[in-house]
Length: 293
Image 1 (cartoon, rainbow, N blue to C red):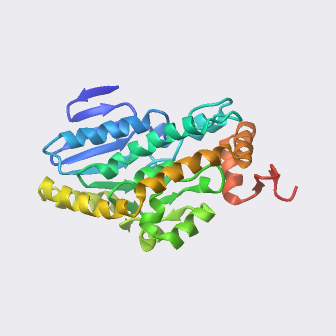
Image 2 (cartoon, one colour):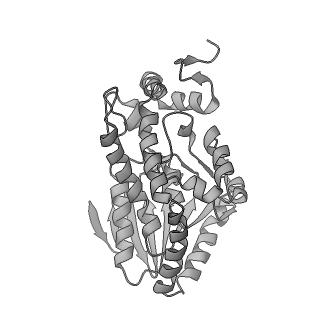
Image 3 (cartoon, one colour):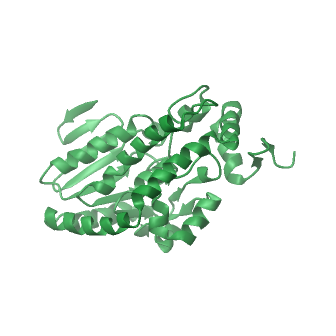
């Protein structure tokens, strides 16, 4: 799946390019709003490892091709299609099988966190669901003011497996976001401390490139040492154990009675209608009917 090109190494769904001292990783399913399928986590990790192996790359810029950074897991493939798949096993749910699949994805997203080089994430359009998981594993996040970030499936059918919300926001602000499943705009995300900075969309590239250029002048070993110390402080607070619990609960949420009802609703009405009902709070997932019926 790797194709050698003149300016780097490309994969069909994730692109890696070398640009002097900057490594560029680009999610590349623009026709699907860069939605996560079975391949994206593997390709993302390979791209991160490619930056690690190149001794001339000092900093990594992560972005998405097309209209958005990432629209989360591909609900058309994982929820709208009939029958079991890696995300939904139906009534005969094997929690360990589910856990292994999602833990593998979580750890591949976390390759961004473990990368010894700083990872700058550039969010335009939106970074929602699993797309927010990917973004929040980065080191410095820049977000367009008109972009949106959120984990709407905390309302039903999801629990963010990387658990990065609480480590970036603290307990109370994380609860405010994850209890509601609300999407947050760039300005609010920056004010809450979820992202480093929010700027007008037409200034986003300029802002990210300025920081990437600045970091590229620092020796690689100095950057690695600072990242190692800061990450250790977060990991000492229990990051790995929290992620294991979150990944297990994510599987439970997709196979609870409400989770089964959501999956059936998506199959019956399509994922766009089902998530509209989920996000607007017009469907009772426990009673499996529209509120007020």
